[in-house]
Length: 144
Ligand code: DQA
Image 1: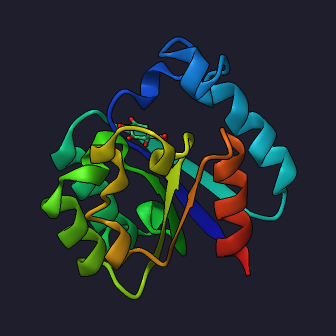
Image 2 (image 1 turned 60 degrees about the horizontal axis):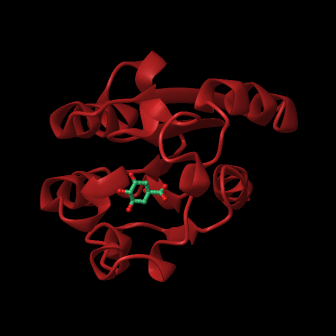
C-alpha cells in the first residue's frame, strides 16, 4: 500500500515553528520513524506552502503518473484547512481516494477560527491533537 503524506503551509518549519504548540522535532526526522513503524507501507511525502501546488499533488495522487499515485492520503492542510474551498473541491474531485485530515495541535481547543474546517466534510475522518503522533494514527486508520 502506498500512502501519501501531504503537509501544507508553514509545516516545513516543524521543529522551529512555535515549538510549544507543534513540538521540537522536524518532520523529516519523524518521517524516518514512521517508515520504520510501517515497513510494509510505502510512505511518500510532499510539502508545499502554495495552495495550487497542494491541489496539483492531490490530483496527481489520483490521476497522475503511476509514480505519483497513492492508495490513500494523510493531509495536514495547515491554515488552508480553515478557508480553502479550492482544497476541499480537490479532495472531493479525487474521490473515492480516501483523505484523512490531520492536525498536530488540538484545533478545537485553540482560537475560534481553527474550529472550522472546510475540508472535514469531504475527508474520510479527522485526527487532531496528538502531536506528530496524529500522522501515525491517520496512517493506522488508512491502512485498515
Ligand atoms: C495545524 C493547525 C492549523 O490551524 C494551523 O494553521 C497549522 C497547523 C496543526 O497541525 O495543528 O498550520 O494544521
